Image (cartoon, rainbow, N blue to C red; front, side, top):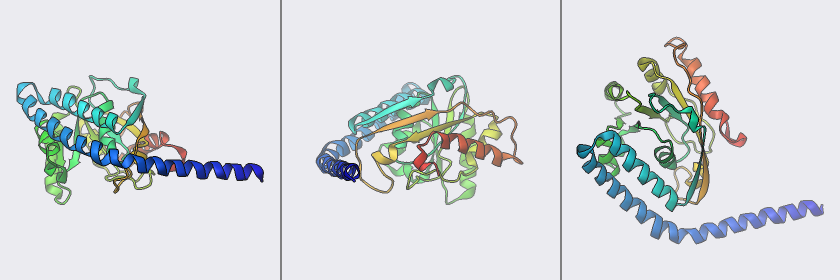
Length: 263
């Protein structure tokens, strides 16, 4: 009984401390981090527009995207641990699939994955000041989900860009997980991998949902882990057994999540 009471006091004390820290963090979030996010997005979006014609989209995307993401991660502050970087061959193009817990997944992938890739992103993001125009200039892929034919046309055009070590990245769940569990996967990423005869590169991100939970502004510092799994050879798969490839990839990504939110 004494041990249980002591444990309850410790838990309650921890919760009270976390609430106090959250309250103390709010002025920093609104008066330092949020202005920094806005200014850095406008600055690096504009810099991307300048660098693309002077250098090339690949250089501009990698330099501006990586620096923008890392700076916003550091200012949060968010600490990122990367596992399995040796599984990447920088000369190989991949279809990258990652789980999706938070808007901060973008910072983690762009800032710490370390390879050139194109995003597949929803059309609405084209309207974000700085971000939208910058992404368009470096060749990221905007998908109009409300128009199936336009979406297919965008993907067909995108296939031309996925060569010579440039990869494409999908969130196959299609939306952010509200509780950290892994949702069902859509087929788009896997069909592209089969069409282009490219390996899948599964990536698991954990912890971003606590840094910024979906559909909230409850930003809070935290620690994030990104696990880069071994590539999956897609040569044994086709349209008839594509579901097996989807399930295999999903199992691999799920294996990198904490046991409490694997489903």
